[in-house]
Length: 115
Image (cartoon, one colour):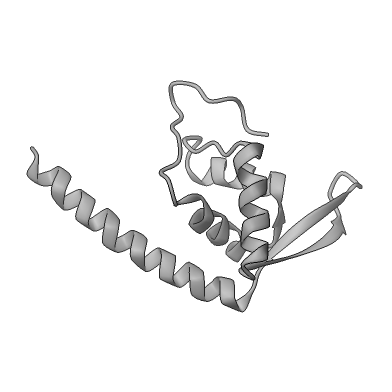
């Protein structure tokens, strides 16, 4: 698992974890630990996803039909549940990404006007 949070890390904004998981899995099907590590790497060591948040989110996304999962052998020789994006997940990711672009743009405008 990525190292524990320190002064260089920050919490996730509420509602963004599902979108980021879908994005990471869209790049390549992965097991839970690999998803957490990849989020940490892609974010330049800023984002930390704890198991207590990650695994419930993965199960929720699977229940919604946005991820599918199958057991496969891992690189360590153990069985791991590997998550893949479904076609419904692709549509949801596109929707979430557009909403994120709109909201982050609006927030940038507000923050820029405050200076």
